[in-house]
Image 1: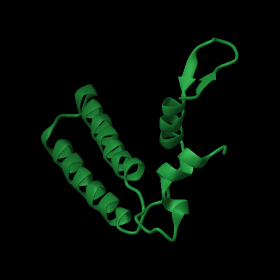
Image 2: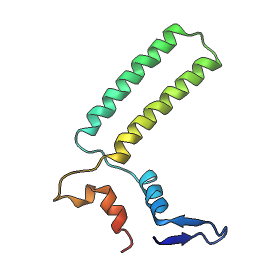
Image 3: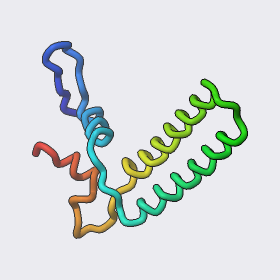
Length: 105
């Protein structure tokens, strides 16, 4: 496995870690059915946010509940975006894993 040395610190970044970072910090255009699921998750998060707003007093705890709900929605969307790949063999540009594996060759 190829290791990448960072110039200043001397810490080592493995090829697998480099691929993981590329996956985390690269835009993932939505696949056809993903947009529908993003909307479904947002609708449920909004429903729960309204339940919080109508059942909890205003204050720090309510604000933290909203923040954590936003984070939950973010991570649910990220799970979809980062971990699903096109199965269309004719369109390898949407196959994110292969794209990262072949990058730099």
